[in-house]
Image (tube, rainbow, N blue to C red; front, side, top):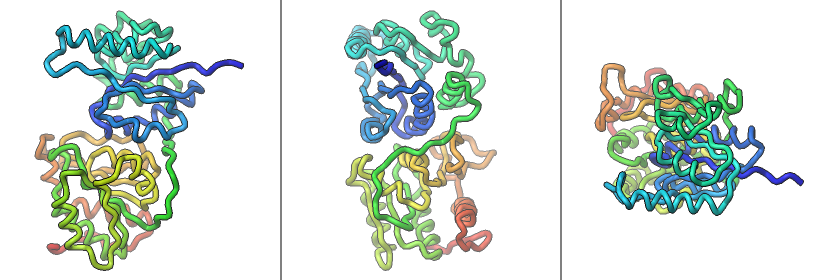
Length: 338
């Protein structure tokens, strides 16, 4: 009986939202290789909370990171050696490095892995065979996280990456709307006053069940929602729940609307249509279920640009979403103050 190849993907990720947005790519890669995948990533991605339940995930390993300011010091070298030792113990057959840094390719190269694939950016090429350079000029051709998409297309000879939802425990929740007010920072957090208007608008359309996804530091926002919408409304708050515990609720939502954060990308991967309010970062378009409300073309992206997005623009896009779902919406919907 032929043993399944051991595959490692190294993707540090900047945060768990960015990491989740690539899951459909990595699922496609796992299917193409007919093998499960072990992921090496940073702890900030919180990958163990949503990857370990997936059929194509073998394991999640976390990168041993140097202390801040230790980039070219002995401490950095020690962290690289620790990562190499950890990987060496598992004896991987192949490794795919989805990051332009030489550091992560260096770790793979000295971990006795037979076949290493990388983006092929600058000095990376010294450690890669020519045919294993995934996208040597991707910085001039793609934007942001598109390197994963473009690289997987090249590996699988596919011009299209098919969306495939993550698996999740079923739950008896129906007609719930997800409102994602959580965000990693203020630059991605649309004002709570706007979300109160969104809730009022949806209640007027006879939506009465809401999943409010908020952060640990948003108790004041939660209290505002409770004060305004406690009557004739069923509201589930998730600030006290782990990511893995939120998945069953999120999966059953009819649709979601919210900030550009990990839960928005997770809802898309759970096959839920999601409207994301963009601000400091350009939109990512990797699924037909992912829609955006972006800043105006004449507005520069900055930590405060999300606050230039008007409630009227979001309501118009939300109205389009409801129309697609067969809801009755008045064109050019407007709200009075909540």
